Length: 299
Image 1: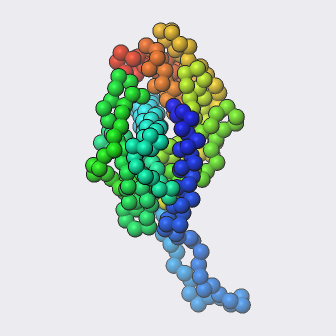
Image 2: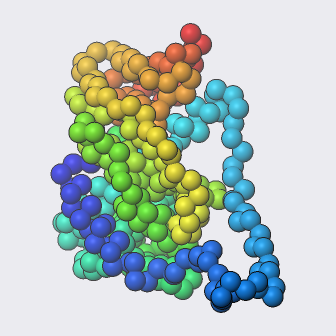
Image 3: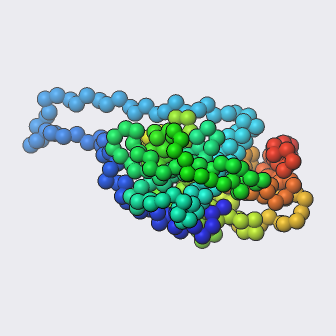
C-alpha cells in the first residue's frame, strides 16, 4: 500500500508532531489547589464536578450485513487515506507543492467523497489549524491506484482537518503493534461525533501481506481527548494472493465479522483477481470485480 516513501512520511510527521506540541492547548487536570493544611478539616467541600459526557456515538448495527458494511467502509476509507498520503508525499518530493515547513502537520481528510492531503500549522485558537497547502486526488483512472492529484485552493473544513491532524499526533505517540512480521502506521478517520485512529500494516503487496494486528484508538472530534484504546490486537499472520487464478479465499481468524485488515486485503486482491472470498466461521463474504458488490452465504 505504501512504498519506500513511508520512512519519509514518518520522519516528516514526527517532526511535525514535535513542533506542534508547543501550540497545543494545555489539557485540564482533575487536581485541586489550596487544600487544607496542618491536618485541619476544610471549611467547605469542593463541589463535585459532573461526569464527562461522552459523544453521542452512531448507533451500532445489529445484523450481520450492517456490521459487515460498517467494518468494510472503514477498510475502504483506510485504503483511501493511505493512497492520499502516498500521493501527497510523492507530490511533495516532486516539488509540486512548493515549500513545506518542517513544523507543519500532514494529514488526509475525505471531504464530499474526495480525498485531500492537507499541510497546515496547528494553532491554539479556532478553528485549530491554518491550512497552508491542499493536494486533492481527482481524475480517477482505470483503478483506484491510478488517481492523479492537483494542488487546489477550494474551501476546506479546517475544523475537520485540525481534529484529524491532532488525533494523528496521538497515534504517532502510541506504541504501534508489530512482532517482526510487518510495520504499522496510524490512520486517522473522522466519524460523525468522534475520530478513530487505526493502526494498519504499511507495506502490503499481493505476494506478501500482513493481516491482523489492527488496533484502534478513539479520540474526541477535536483530537484532544482519548475516549478509548483497544487493549489487545488480533494475531498477525502473513498471507499471499495467488496470481493468475479466478478466485481467492482468505480464511478469516474471526467467527463472524472479518478483521479490518482482512477486508483491506480483499479490496487489494480484487484488483488482480475476478473474485475474492473472505471466510469466517459463520459466513462466506464474496466480492466480485464485475459488480464491486459483496454477497453473503451462511455456512
